[in-house]
Length: 273
Image 1 (cartoon, rainbow, N blue to C red):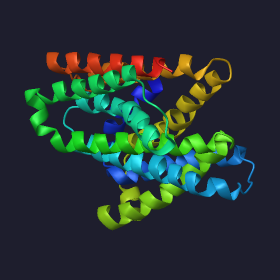
Image 2: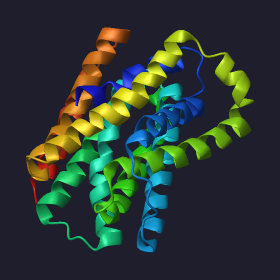
Image 3: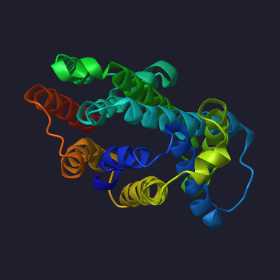
């Protein structure tokens, strides 16, 4: 959770080092692909996996990364962005109910509404009036993350390394094209990236995307999902701590109160089965 929480302040740090946001996402995905492909057994999956694999790759590889870094680029303060990303869990549950016909209990609905209430409370902070665009972008990121979890339910029988390597390749291709169209010549962009920018990109691709997530997959081998997944609610805590250490940003009382409501709601939401 420390590594996952560090994605927000370290992502902002990288964007400050002359990297455009969509290019940042593209480079992160190509690092994921290059790091995982040597460990993959290249095998064409069955046809029933084609659509969910492509959907997962587009949503997680392109959608999540593009809107995450666009949000960080637009944000002047990171606290609401870090907390708002937690909405990916209740959105994933709602989308699973719509597309997978999974039932949502009354207790879950209460916690879902509580998490949204926490975000609404944060929205009343005077500082948020200047963060509307960044907040909407992080909501889009949370939506694509939730949708990617729906697609991933169909891919549980595939090798994790293969699905993530394919996701990295598809995400890179889509994002590099979008970056070229909207951010300018990709070769010129890459040549202008500073050393700190490359360090941030490598950290995001190799440490956060691979090392951080693989540690969770490792835990799933020994512990039930219901025991591991609730700790996902801790990543904004580490994100806010690192944001304070790197940028000296101190959340307001309203942000802290709303953040506690969101984190506790998401934690309890993942405890209910």
